[in-house]
Length: 85
Image (cartoon, rainbow, N blue to C red; front, side):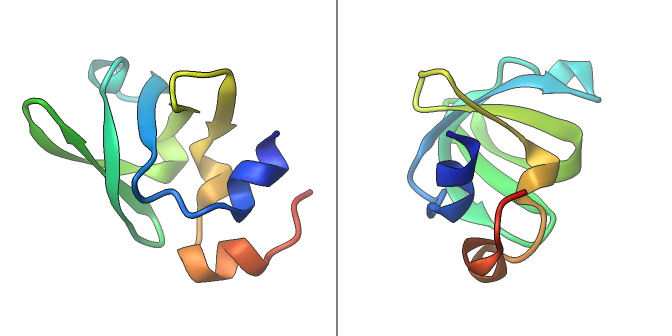
């Protein structure tokens, strides 16, 4: 399941932060609107939130698809080409 998520384009997917080093970020949910090397931008009801990938655990599309943000680190175009460990 994790390998599939690493190969996908994340922009447009629904995401919920289920764990974070910054505990106030837990529970943030919305659509991913942008992705950079180290961050993802989530559009929520209260506005846009920028999250550092290395600090979060994300659940996608309200399912059991969960991934550590650190596994998503790197440029999106390079991540899609990279082999999953």
